[in-house]
Length: 475
Image (cartoon, rainbow, N blue to C red; front, top):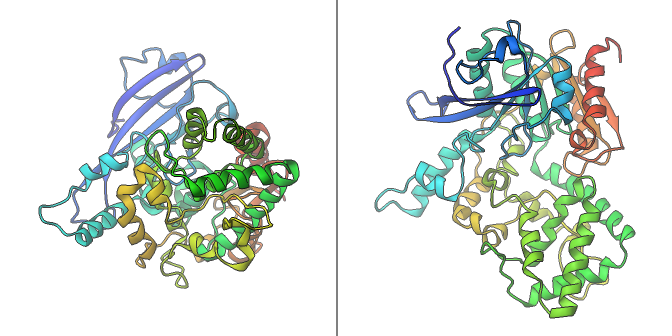
């Protein structure tokens, strides 16, 4: 069989092989007059088989005669996939079950036509005498091709190239779960089964619904943090007072503002996040007492705690992923997290110098101030405002189609975390009730043992439990 791709890397590590394939795919799947293409790169990880792979560096990409492919759909949005350098974590669980694992760098990330400040100016170059508004409009038109619906089209094109009409499986983490439901809405007949970890999307709910729940969950995590480290109430206030009264520049030229420091609460959603926060707070406060300014090491640590500078789509699309063209109740996101921050119930998230209450850290939310505070985001400020005011969204989910996907057609299983800071437990259960309507599909492994990143904390238990659900014919 002749494959329409380029093999760009191939290597063996102990008992596995990795092969990276580059596909040239359409920028736009909806505009047939647009002939532009982008590179999309996948890595396929397999157990080493001497009969297939002994001539690794001289032959093209090889799959078993009867492939059993599963696609790991990365979270984010805006993150590439890591290439496994050992048979460990969820990769080992899947390989031991006989899968070959496909890791796709979603368009705009990793090796797939990456979007960052410099490359974006090359990909969407400004015309001579072009106005700011016209240039921003063209940037918006370009980047809207990087949403989940286009990512799904990439997967489907690659599936047809690699295995023809054969079905494959998905394992979607977080936003990867959202993307998996878009795939189910568009091409359910291409899928054998779908596993989701912390990623059932809030179908028929908009950004405001999501962030009302997110602020509530993030408040709970703050309460846990301050209960565990009560001395940090004063330390955090000391740090925020210092930042409010001083201009603090990070090593890459970004601003460490009050709001940016509060955004470290993003880490509360992962295992050990409160403990790592305490270490930063303790060291920062100690240095203020010792020197009256934070050390370079502290500033560098804080800078590296965030991915917004290195993963532009993560910042730009944080609210756009909740804007579904099939949900007529949602127009623009209109900076949902920024607006809802100032509701009375969320007063602890707003820094006030003389407040008697603890100041809360925020979570997986974007704010207008980020486009001044993060050095790599500054050039995207006009585009960010255009995205948050945009009302023309492509469809992401078809609730009618999803509701008809019974267990015998395509099996769907999900790990749902009770204390998930990013994907609300209650919203997930509402989606199951309202979309799947107790039709026997979307079977859940529900646990309070893990936070959002359960697949990383204990892949054998989380992924193993999902595979167990797939193999069990009764609830």
